[in-house]
Amino acid sequence: FEDCIGLVHLRGSLFDTVPAGGMLSVPMSVTALEPYLGDLDLASVNAPELTVVSGPDAALDDLATRLQAEGIETQRIAIDIAAHSRMLEPILARFRAYLASIPLHPPRLPIISNRTGQALTADQATSPDYWTQHLRGTVMFADCVSTLAENTNRIWIEVGPGKALSSLTRMHGAVPPQQVLAVLRHPEEDIADDLYHMGLLGRIWALGGQFDWAQIWGEARRNRVPLPSYPFDRREYFIAPAAPSAQTATALPARIEAVADMGTRIGWVPRSAEIEFDVDVDLDEAPAETWLIFADQDGIAAPVVARMRASGHKVIEVQAGDTFRRRTDSTYTLPTERGREGYDQLIQDLVHRGTVPTRIAHFWLASGEERFRPGSSAFQAHVEQGFYSLMFLGQAIGAEGLTGPIHMTVVTAGAAQVRDEDLRWPEKAMIAGPARVIPHEIAGLTVSTLDIEPVMRRRGGHPDLVQPLLEELFAAPGNAIAALRGGKRLEQRLRPQPLTQDPELPHGAAWVITGGFGGIGQSVAEALIQRTGAKIAL
Image (cartoon, rainbow, N blue to C red; front, side):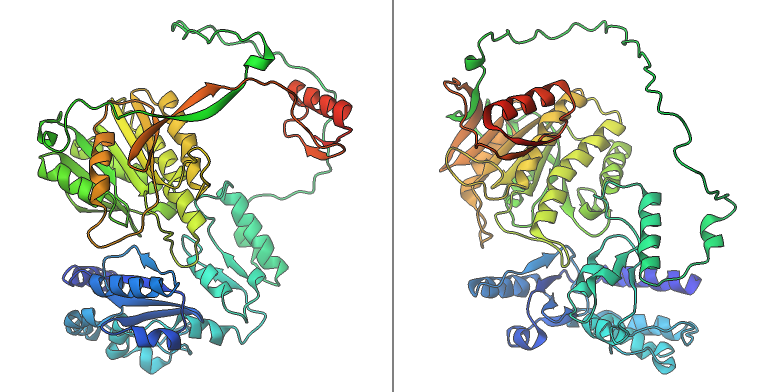
């Protein structure tokens, strides 16, 4: 075990000495991709039509641009190391020397080598050269799956957080998808861990798996119990109302007597950001703030951060990554796929260091491109980095008892529908939920949103966006809903909409009414039946 810990520590230390690079996921076969590689290396073959290349950032950007011009969408992997590439060669000698200094043993359990795609041999397992090439060479994950898939009754179980490997395995045509299972639930699955675990055992059992039930039940007794075990006597229990709050209640809106006057519609009106200085010349005179900025991968936030730092503002930058890590005093990585955990660690570390933010800027949905990890989807990435990111961030702030004042600005692209335009990414629009609710649940925290027109990543960035973004970030705190369209800032307003006539409803249609057993639901159901002869499911 100590040798293993030493190897992992050495690997991390050596990686810190490697020049910055990265990895790019490409939906192409090895044969189709090879002519494009140039100075890049083939890092892994994850599926017949899914590969990963590794190398310097500039070369990766050039490859992504070339493929995009040919209609092939790539995905940058959130890692700053060019793993499994020639950039690791300067560290291989030290890595091999450590391997040669520790005892290596043949495997006691069958292992498939991701260097060959075949069973790991005793000679390979005890060879320092093999494990050195394991660090440098191409990962043949697809070949490993092909070898294991020769047994059609095999049950595939992913051990560890996430479901990325399960998704890659299902891409193999010889693997029945229903036989691929993940031992841990996804962070966004709303299910208790023990319930998920028992469901997993049931699925394994249904596929022919066997268990030592004594290990599962332990000393707990399991008895057969006839149900129901009590009479349904419909007894009522009165719950006394809570004592009235001593806090002065906010005045309620005036009652609208006429139903025809109750309608509203969303409108957008031109309005400048409420800012009291010129960000082009007076940014260094702005009040001192501690900024926490969730930076996007396409460089929308980068020039804004650079301007703020050049003007003397304290900026702490957070990027999406594989693990939670404080890379420097002013940069963090945070794993969005692991739920609230990373956000709690981030806020706790900021509090411990005495760098609690007074302003937050969230740019993770500002990209005009779809970026996601292999095995995931753009939809999943947008939800994780939008709705759940804001929700977990708000929960982490609330858990630390931070009472502000803190103002958060959420910058998105394609998340708002202005006038008659199409809504590009409806899942991004889900940020409206936490953005509107958080200020009501956490005292002293305000949230405003700004939606920009989707733009593609390009060399030189988008300098035309820097000024309006700075004006939005430094504007007076509030809960504005704004959008930038054609260089003009618009704010959302509710306008009166007279209800001049009853809506035209289809005759005899089928309706599902959720919450239909309440008074309102039953009233709506009765009205639909009487007016249109509707078929109702409550």
